[in-house]
Length: 567
Image 1 (cartoon, rainbow, N blue to C red):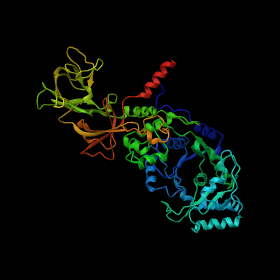
Image 2: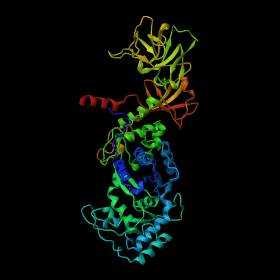
Image 3: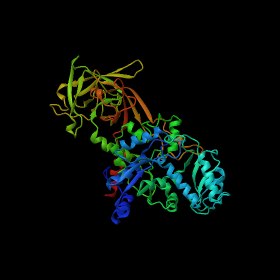
Image 4: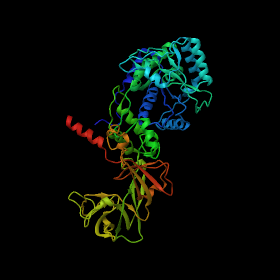
């Protein structure tokens, strides 16, 4: 089995290494992460962040954080600030290299005017529907717009009046004049400016025309001196357009566009449109819902940033699309938490245990390590008294053959404590088990006995007198199928929503050591999984924990099984 932190292949790194060897770009490496501020970032963006910032760091270059903010209707300062938080949380810093496409609106406008003067752009007065109809199909060429041959003077006049706000939205657009018969649809006279009478989050109402993404993006790269413009495969068909703008305008800096496969993760949707639907339909509580694949959601859930970086290294960078099993992500999360998360005990579904031969009123302090393999974390004390709580699932009145935990007449070990034996089962009027009466062996403290007898099970527990109450949220996959995008006929991806993706447990009990647990801190609840203190809802008076991940590592087991088959 490969270690979760092993770095997989990265063909883009190979390209950069060759550029370094040949002295291309004078040895400089400048990348950029260019999000549109119209939503929250998700784990697919984390792959791009790690790739762009990681290459810049490795080759002693720079990575710019640039917001491609060319659509004021969908953009918001909230998204800008959330993106900054996410990039920083992942462990990357853009330093002085924070930019916005809106920084270049004047220069982009000048570029558009230059295209008109060169006869390479024209004002088109077709409607959006007509432009779409004239564009043709993948098998049929497009048709020239009847406005394609307007002279330069008329185009300059109309474009100036567009900027002055004389026309309503949809009245005119500015289009590049390329080739309506091109087999590449993106080259069939694409729109490069449109009228939008909307207030921009940075420029206010200064502009009423805004550049299209394809036009602004490549020129922003050039203005900033980007050497390697790295994007996902859906932009591959747009690469000729990227180069056309730079070649036609004869820009001094001509970045290289390189495409890689975007992340596809099982049991997850990574379409921004679909994530917005989940939020708007209140299927989740918000962008930072711990079930969401957003970076803010994963941060709130308690996922360590190192785990996401390891995951991105592990999956590598390839040219072909593929589906990554979510169990690999979970493995990377466990791999980090196993080393860093202190161990404590918690009982999520309490069942009361009374040790009848333990002195009433006595509270004993047991010592236990916070991490069995890291003594530097230190120890904590665990109170032990006559009344305890264990998990309901750790007791069965009529156990099946392979059930080794507590049962009538059976002896088990309490973690860090004593051997106990169940002597009596107490039920309420409804026949439900509400209490167990047990005895303990005083000679078994720490897990051994003078006669050397062994037990088959060790249970976690908490002291009823000193344990703190807590609420615990148990999360499962948000979708029931590995590919949520494959929905039944007549339905969309929401038909695959898992109705049991969230379970809230009230009345849980946790060790008193957790009384001062910091917001966002991560812990292993022994035998139960990894949990974090919710940074939004938890308070000192009411501890709320999110389960980050269970202890069961399905990916590691699958890899081990595959290794045995091939050995």
